[in-house]
Image 1 (cartoon, rainbow, N blue to C red):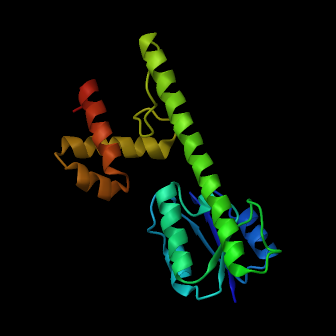
Image 2 (cartoon, rainbow, N blue to C red):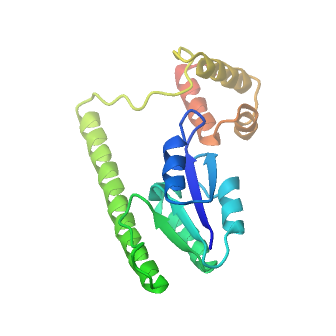
Length: 204
């Protein structure tokens, strides 16, 4: 039996050290780590981990949200782990290490995880509802201004300001949204929103 750890943060500026230390203290012989968003499952180190594990191995994470950002993705990854005949452990949740029966341990562990996932999803829904209600109240009172654009021509972040200028130049050169997004390494939705904004201000 081998114990594998998985550590993830969403950006290059974030630190993995706390997760790695916790995983190694728990006895993980190998820790797969990456600095990528959890918005999808296209993560090289996660894929390597899932291909590496074998029957009776254990996969460990510090927190459940290190696997993914939503219940669907988390469940899909957990199913892949179970299909390999492996167990899954979350260090921040109650541990059943003292239980020798593998099936009972797995059952209890999965039950706790399902409860946690339900609570987390419910909290996310409540937050979205409160945000929506707050926006509607602000709109009604005439004080809602919307979120500030990341890529602005007068941004305090010089890199973001430069990207905004490049977007505007490419708009005026009749470049398509998909081409701009791929060229500048930003999302197509961002380009689409900037096009609307620049049209509204008369920049294009």
